[in-house]
Length: 95
Image (tube, rainbow, N blue to C red; front, side, top):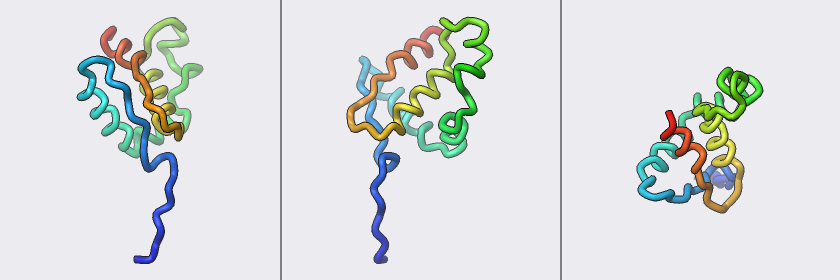
């Protein structure tokens, strides 16, 4: 009692645009975004394009780890507009 909740960008993550029957994907992504070890891994620069073995071999390759990193970056950016995870979806379909 008596403690005010501080409002920050991480309390409300960005919504995802529906890309056509992608509601379930969006809900799974939002669940993954709340897992602290995954937050630490992707937001603490443990997976970057510079360190990615897939991207080092082929810079044009679709790496699911790099796309997941992008999703984490966008979700925790603190922007109020929805994010479209189209490149993540494309990478998922490709592999």
